[in-house]
Amino acid sequence: MTHPRLQLTGITKAYPGVVANSDVSLTVMPGETHAVLGENGAGKSTLMKIIYGSVKPDAGEIRLNGQPIVIRNPKEARANGISMVFQHFNLFDTMTVAENVWLGLTRNSLEQVTASIIAKANEYGLDIDPARPVHTLSVGEMQRVEIIRALLTRPELLILDEPTSVLTPQAVEKLFVVLKKLASEGCSILYISHKLHEIRELCTACTVLRGGKVTGVCNPQEESNASLSRLMIGAEPPQLEHTPQPTGESRLLVTNLSLPREDQFGVDLDGINLDVRAGEVVGIAGVSGNGQKELLYALSGEDCRSPAGSVRMGDKDVSAVHPGGRRKLGLHFVPEERLGRGAVPTLSLAHNLLLTRTGSIKHPKFAGGWIQVGKLESHAADIIKAFNVKANGPTAAARSLSGGNLQKFIVGREIDAKPTLFIVSQPTWGVDVGAAAQIRGEILALRDAGCAVLVVSEELEELFEVSDRMHVIARGRLSPSVPIAEATVEKIGEWMSGLWDQASAPAEVQHA
Image 1: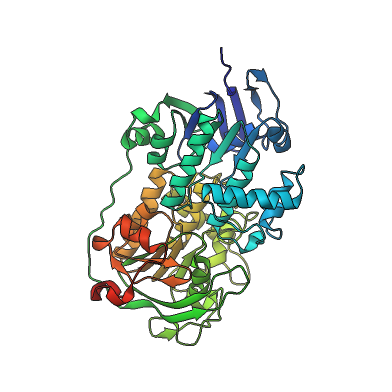
Image 2: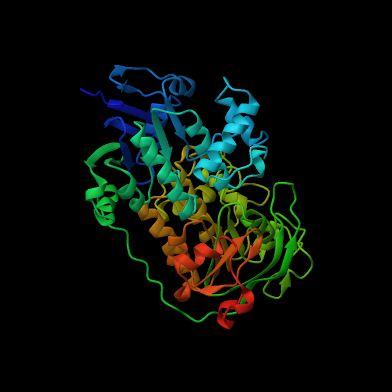
């Protein structure tokens, strides 16, 4: 009789104010791709970290290949054939891709690791340069590094926590080919994702967590998206109402913006033209690492090198205006990196409010020499409640939240500021289907209230759901815009390779 690859019995883990896992049992067979499904804060990531040895359980037993085992740290996990791709990456910013991978593969030389990275990247279509420092990579590129690093360990059990959250549909297809091949060779896979169609395609078993407890086990291939959603959150996500409406004045106008890269691994911006008007959502699709980061830095004010007149907000030239100055003009921005740029990990949620609040007429002022802590915490509590953020109150440190819950708080913080121009990158990265529907609904509500919204995302489904017009960015160039009614997945997919012809595009498509 074949022993289970992994068997968890009665796993319990509690933190101050919250029980992350409560008496969780789970069995994964050799060659099985097993989904762990649950809304944000359900305890999925904590459970995976226990298996990987980075978190110690308070109670329960782990068996690997039929034998009881105590996994004290990730090194012991890797020695026992367990590898993990984290949702929040474990990479050293100042080291290169190859050096980061080498840390976990010390039996090989750096030259051997570099060659292995290139071979795996080519084999699996996960394009990456081993010589690049990690700090120059986009979030999507960092995710490729984590996936390649895990694959190079040749694991018997591979844990994937939101592995496709910032991968394009084409890259997801290639990854699934890899994962199915690994499973056919006997590798067991634990797969966490909020993309229900992925789970139904890839996984043959599923354990559902709600509030840290197992609430169901099923074969996802016998379920629908609706039934999986009901198992996970107890209901189906609400349908978005996206009705056409007339647009108002231009809130963001980018004219022939060209910027040389700031480092050798960046992307040059080449002749970017973009117009975002009041009362519309403009989406930008593209493969990670094609200039999204550079464009967003230029639009947010983090990069103030833009030529005079190339970036305007209304009638004001903001090309050289810093982020605080643009914020006073009504721009609020959600970056793709949650921890470090979107929030200070060690600060409380309440104090993280201070990062983007300047005390203008449109939103309250919390500091003027002295921080008004009571008012600050009360307002943070209102955002936590409005956006259904699972946290131990407004004094909880940002790093204590699950990735999806921190995303909800950051998006909620910026929407609560009532922006006139809202720019958001990867708005629903790593959030469950219910929270994704809420965030997308809030984006449309902002648009309906007259805000101009720019959404940069690598999830085409998301862009088709919220956008009125779409662009594609490829190799630092921006395509013409196309009305959502005329956009197709096939067309956008072609444009992601830079295959568009402005000269032959219809007039209404050339509107930018």
